[in-house]
Image (cartoon, rainbow, N blue to C red; front, side, top):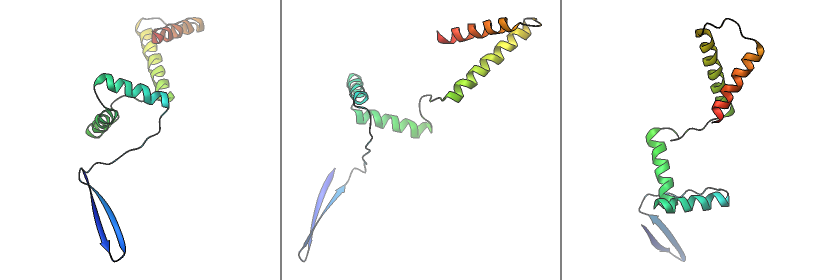
Length: 117
Protein backbone atom coordinates (compact mmCIF):
# COMPACT_ATOMS: atom_id res chain seq x y z
CA UNK A 1 0.00 0.00 0.00
CA UNK A 2 1.38 3.38 -1.00
CA UNK A 3 0.40 6.87 -0.05
CA UNK A 4 1.73 10.22 -1.11
CA UNK A 5 2.39 13.05 1.26
CA UNK A 6 2.55 16.54 -0.16
CA UNK A 7 4.42 19.22 1.75
CA UNK A 8 4.85 22.86 0.93
CA UNK A 9 7.48 25.07 2.45
CA UNK A 10 7.65 28.62 1.21
CA UNK A 11 7.70 28.29 -2.59
CA UNK A 12 8.93 24.68 -2.58
CA UNK A 13 6.63 21.72 -2.87
CA UNK A 14 7.70 18.18 -1.91
CA UNK A 15 6.08 14.88 -2.71
CA UNK A 16 7.01 11.98 -0.47
CA UNK A 17 5.84 8.49 -1.41
CA UNK A 18 5.66 6.05 1.47
CA UNK A 19 5.46 2.29 0.94
CA UNK A 20 3.46 0.84 3.82
CA UNK A 21 3.81 -2.81 2.79
CA UNK A 22 7.56 -3.10 3.45
CA UNK A 23 8.13 -4.69 0.05
CA UNK A 24 11.07 -4.13 -2.28
CA UNK A 25 11.54 -4.58 -6.00
CA UNK A 26 14.14 -6.69 -7.76
CA UNK A 27 15.03 -6.27 -11.39
CA UNK A 28 16.89 -9.00 -13.29
CA UNK A 29 17.90 -9.52 -16.90
CA UNK A 30 17.09 -12.81 -18.62
CA UNK A 31 16.86 -14.07 -22.16
CA UNK A 32 13.55 -13.24 -23.80
CA UNK A 33 12.72 -16.87 -24.61
CA UNK A 34 13.54 -18.02 -21.06
CA UNK A 35 11.30 -15.34 -19.61
CA UNK A 36 8.42 -16.33 -21.87
CA UNK A 37 8.74 -20.04 -21.05
CA UNK A 38 9.00 -19.25 -17.32
CA UNK A 39 5.85 -17.10 -17.39
CA UNK A 40 3.98 -19.82 -19.31
CA UNK A 41 4.98 -22.47 -16.77
CA UNK A 42 4.06 -20.23 -13.85
CA UNK A 43 0.68 -19.69 -15.47
CA UNK A 44 0.21 -23.47 -15.78
CA UNK A 45 1.06 -23.79 -12.08
CA UNK A 46 -1.45 -21.07 -11.24
CA UNK A 47 1.28 -18.72 -10.00
CA UNK A 48 2.51 -15.34 -11.00
CA UNK A 49 6.23 -15.00 -11.73
CA UNK A 50 6.54 -12.78 -8.65
CA UNK A 51 4.99 -15.49 -6.46
CA UNK A 52 7.33 -18.12 -7.94
CA UNK A 53 10.37 -15.94 -7.18
CA UNK A 54 9.09 -15.28 -3.66
CA UNK A 55 8.74 -19.04 -3.09
CA UNK A 56 12.29 -19.56 -4.38
CA UNK A 57 13.76 -16.78 -2.23
CA UNK A 58 11.94 -17.97 0.90
CA UNK A 59 13.24 -21.51 0.32
CA UNK A 60 16.82 -20.21 -0.06
CA UNK A 61 16.57 -18.18 3.14
CA UNK A 62 14.83 -20.96 5.09
CA UNK A 63 17.19 -23.75 3.99
CA UNK A 64 20.32 -21.56 3.77
CA UNK A 65 21.13 -23.10 0.37
CA UNK A 66 19.99 -23.15 -3.24
CA UNK A 67 17.15 -25.70 -3.26
CA UNK A 68 18.62 -27.65 -6.18
CA UNK A 69 22.05 -28.93 -7.13
CA UNK A 70 24.43 -26.69 -9.03
CA UNK A 71 27.54 -28.50 -10.18
CA UNK A 72 30.72 -27.64 -11.97
CA UNK A 73 33.17 -29.56 -14.11
CA UNK A 74 35.21 -30.21 -10.95
CA UNK A 75 32.32 -31.96 -9.21
CA UNK A 76 31.78 -34.13 -12.30
CA UNK A 77 35.45 -35.11 -12.20
CA UNK A 78 35.01 -36.04 -8.54
CA UNK A 79 32.12 -38.32 -9.54
CA UNK A 80 34.27 -39.95 -12.22
CA UNK A 81 37.03 -40.50 -9.68
CA UNK A 82 34.53 -42.07 -7.27
CA UNK A 83 33.31 -44.37 -10.06
CA UNK A 84 36.86 -45.37 -10.85
CA UNK A 85 37.58 -46.10 -7.19
CA UNK A 86 34.40 -48.19 -6.94
CA UNK A 87 35.45 -50.13 -10.03
CA UNK A 88 38.90 -50.62 -8.56
CA UNK A 89 37.32 -52.01 -5.35
CA UNK A 90 35.10 -54.38 -7.33
CA UNK A 91 38.14 -55.72 -9.14
CA UNK A 92 40.03 -56.20 -5.87
CA UNK A 93 37.08 -58.03 -4.30
CA UNK A 94 36.57 -60.27 -7.33
CA UNK A 95 40.03 -61.81 -6.84
CA UNK A 96 41.23 -60.64 -10.24
CA UNK A 97 44.95 -60.17 -9.74
CA UNK A 98 46.08 -58.32 -12.81
CA UNK A 99 44.28 -56.64 -15.68
CA UNK A 100 45.57 -55.68 -19.06
CA UNK A 101 45.27 -52.13 -20.29
CA UNK A 102 42.63 -53.27 -22.79
CA UNK A 103 40.56 -54.81 -19.98
CA UNK A 104 40.79 -51.65 -17.93
CA UNK A 105 39.75 -49.51 -20.90
CA UNK A 106 36.80 -51.82 -21.57
CA UNK A 107 35.61 -51.45 -17.97
CA UNK A 108 35.94 -47.69 -18.21
CA UNK A 109 33.83 -47.75 -21.39
CA UNK A 110 31.15 -49.79 -19.64
CA UNK A 111 30.98 -47.37 -16.71
CA UNK A 112 30.73 -44.38 -19.05
CA UNK A 113 27.99 -46.08 -21.06
CA UNK A 114 26.06 -46.76 -17.84
CA UNK A 115 26.28 -43.08 -16.88
CA UNK A 116 24.83 -42.01 -20.22
CA UNK A 117 21.64 -44.00 -19.60
